[in-house]
Length: 388
Image 1: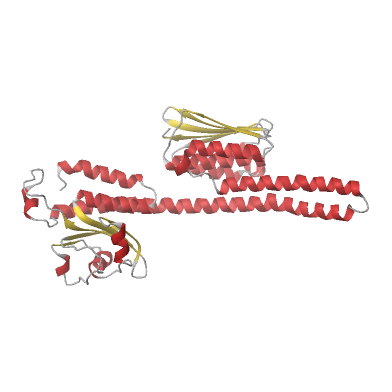
Image 2: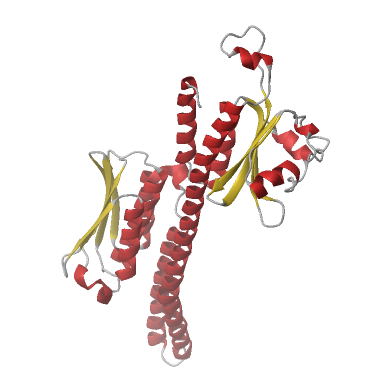
């Protein structure tokens, strides 16, 4: 049973694990939390691969220099293999005296008392979490129970606490993997869409550019005036192709949200698109600062999709991107004065997939997407997400 005095620390550790979205960050948080909660000198977490080794291995309590000196990652053998194959905890007074112990590399730190716990999702073992060298309380320290002053060994209570941590670690790790997989699929979808646009827009313009240049070459001797007109057309087409490429590059490589934040990223996007297109594109922000990473990514991608529709399909002369706070929420709105469309007939308007993608992004962060449009009266796309 977890003592009342430790509940706050356990709660803080569980919250820290579930705030992370990247698998590597989750692994590091689990290891650091376990080491702190159980007062161990060393902690590590290994995620197995299917070749008898570890796909990922994270440690705490070992310096970078020590880690490099230790050498290659360990294999799945001995006590580590027992935790992974049998999904059984291991609590040992001295790991070196266990019959399964196979020794360490020369640079490996010395370890004695050992506590290991599998991290499992149902019957699937996701990893092995283990601690070594329980810290002893200095003589005379009154903040520790007397039993801890007499022994450095991990206790049954320590094992139960690590079991609780491992159960929540499995949830956090599974969620992080799902998030990364979802992001990979989203990136693949974005690249596919942009690839189609490059083919449909840029490739067509380059083909026209080639034909026009060939016509100018044929006319240059017998009809210089017409050849000159064709060359002006070459210049126009090449300019449009360059604009298409700039816009595609903006979508492929947006400014890093982690470094610049949503507001700066949207402002930069609007400025670049304003220069790349004949339409006027501007951005305004009212009272919105930093948002959770998932919300910022959803808002950015919806803004990009709405901008793409306005600039490529709606023949808009002006597009405005606004980000504002509405109570506890943040609201992104993209409005244009283009030709508009009938939302009830999005398939014929050629926007069905874009609208589905935006709605999926909205639902993924608990947001609400609304689209208002009429033929000849422009379009307004709004996404409201919690956390503003």
